[in-house]
Image 1 (tube, rainbow over the protein chains, first blue to last red):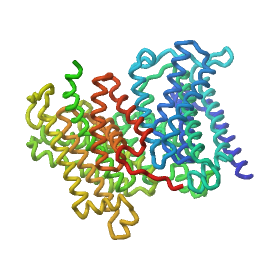
Image 2 (image 1 turned 90 degrees about the horizontal axis):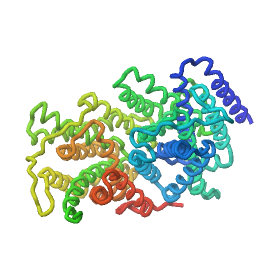
Image 3 (image 1 turned 60 degrees about the vertical axis):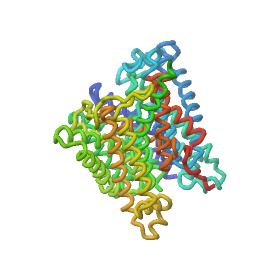
Image 4 (image 1 turned 30 degrees about the vertical axis):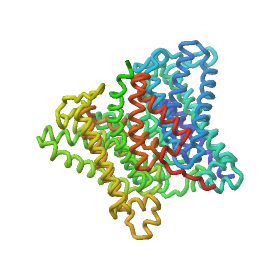
Length: 320
Length: 293
């Protein structure tokens, strides 16, 4: 009971911060970073469900993110399909692709999903670069129409801030509840001990494949929103480095901790921007910080910090 | 007409295949000792090659002296990685350790960029560039070096794992870590040794391929991915599988480039890789992993 109340309080606080931030933050640059945090946060959310609760890693979420972005772009810009239904259709399609990819690989012990998703990401990246007629090739795809609310186009950093963060909060809330639901408990049982979960009558295979498909759908949604927001996409955004970055955000934030994932997304999205002043040394520092955090706070930044402050356990359901 | 090119494809497939095989071996050795997928494997390759370039071109050492020194450099990097972040990590979760190797890979790559710059560098062939014409195929002398050195490395490794006490101890660790510790094998030392060995093998791969393909600070990424795919193709952790997987991937890639399209060369290689993963996920020589349920 108190846990549910706690969840509500924390969530309301987050919503409050999101609502107030535009008053404090001036200038398109900071809004842009906040918007990218919302987009990365969405992808991280899905991947966190997969890693934290099904115990499986995907190194191909950039591909699902890219599928959302490119399919939305191609259909709405080249064939003038309405953006919202397209977004939904692409989401479903991406989930189905992930489902098909997951069936043979998630059945097996070991990390076969990592390899399959990695290979899938590389193939998709090459297709984005090579199929110039459809994707614009390495120079990218420009002129993607914005999303509309009624007849109003959602354009500009501030309008998109509301759009992206509304989506993020919505999906975040659904995910928080999913984690505490029967499905969430089943997934956590699988993560703890697959054999026991199976013996308890949980269809472990099906749960894992379904959560993988859901996480791919999150990434696809983020990709479509990204494309409509920036109106320009290029393959570089969707290479395996992005997949690695997203996994990093999950791990740094704290595996299986959705709040930690948000912190990880925020810190690691902002970090390269802060390090930007270091120019050529930015990536080097990124690598060092990544190693440092993982070596000294392997349970993740947020749980690590909480422990450091000594306030005990965290809100999220996955303390153990 | 395209059939007349077959021998040429065969030769170049064998060449890149040898390199993938060496990288796959590096992956396998670390995986067997620690359970980690080492994402910095490609950086070992790059650092070996770059050190060799500096030693021969800046210091002016002859190839014969520079070669072992560059291999030592690769071993040293592997050693530092193990005694540093990997050993100090306050977690034994495989996922955390794997992500630490990702961090190490970024760090090494960027450090290399500051040392050697961004432009690709090349290395003189070990013995001239006059191709030997053999039927329809022109073979560069460097190709022979690559095949020969790969063969030597594979044979030496085979002897190491089957004849020496340390090699057998490493195999015992791969088989059962706790069991190995119980009979008095220093598991930590074996882990360290696996990184040193992989660093050395990676460096060898980098040194011998650079005269043909050139090397840049970021070239390790794609090489590592190919080596990784080769390791899966052959069966992850299997030494025989790594070699055959590497050669197979090299062949698939060059024939794919020749018969399908060179733009889709990499996509083709990874598509086959995905197919193998779906049909026979344990790879060609992998152990059947029985799920105990």
